[in-house]
Image (tube, rainbow, N blue to C red):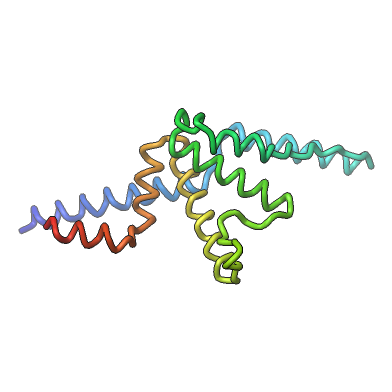
Length: 165
């Protein structure tokens, strides 16, 4: 009986350790990124003290047409799933920043977007971005996380799987 309690405590400690490591990874940044932000902060502080103007480099806008070419031609076969997801999110952001309608929202001649469509599109983009970030470029981790966070609601495949059992 005492051996079972010890084994349960060891399993709980391992689960807690995994949760702690996952939380630590989610709440920390790399040393290079930290040092870059510190250097930028110091540069702005010196400029403020010396009453100088600081030119801030505007992030380069992604080319919408180039992203479309990469995603919607035969070149897409050389990209992994995580790369496709990341480029799709870049394309979505570039399209929205350009003032166009969110490509994740249904829009056509016979349908118009509703408020719930925009909320759903944002939720899909957020989950996809979290999966890309979590995977850190590893396609296997990306697919596992995406499968964990999404659910197949296709009734045909559900029925087909039920018949196989």
